[in-house]
Length: 310
Image 1 (cartoon, rainbow, N blue to C red):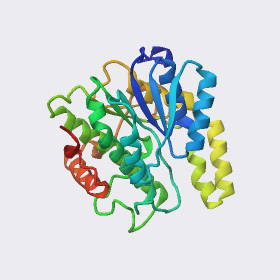
Image 2 (cartoon, rainbow, N blue to C red):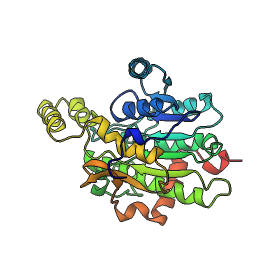
Image 3 (spheres, rainbow, N blue to C red):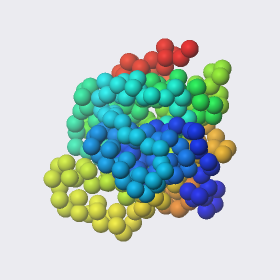
Image 4 (cartoon, helix red, strand yellow):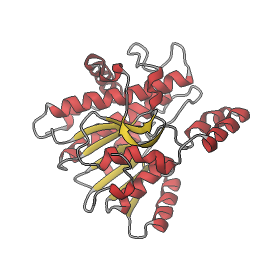
């Protein structure tokens, strides 16, 4: 995969893709490049206005693109269900679980979950389950969940999934990103053991250090102006562009031969560079922990995967 870039994305004509958080940053680039290669892309965005603006911008860059906005608030399970049930496609070839929040001050979702765990993991867990019948209807479909190299900072704590005992913004973020990887591992394991689902691949990717706007959101929310300025400076001096950060995700989503439960990131120190297999903490491939997180996620979201499948 040395030197892999968007020119290596295969023809996606006739494929349907859903990209969450596609109104800006990595999500916008991912949606644009999939559409450029012929996919019909649904830009799933929390704000209907920003989603429509992103579609208008994308059509200005790729006039022939087949794209449409749809409202999806991953912090509201009713919105997740409304989005999934309203999707006008019988099959979905690609789901990119990209949207997320990072290092926010403590808050909760509409359903009462700690926001980073609720949005980054539970929202995408519910969405994937609700779309799984459509994904299984598409031969060779892929589910790509975007994690982070910062998952190494903390494992999931099954006794405190909502981070209520002692909240730390970066610990909560790391736990949510470890949850993304555990979810991918357990989903891949379950798909591999299910008749008729073995060619659907669950994979993960991360952008390294890319300028996505996430790093400034937390300081801005708390009015910490100096921290926000420092984050902006770091983005300008150190971070990759969104275009470079999107490459590992696009590789995981489209390149031939990507194995299920793989983790793709930048080649240089998990930070920047061409897509390459990325190191992951051992706890993200722990079968017992994956089963515990899965059971808790089904209980908390009410999305029971087996009940949704034929």
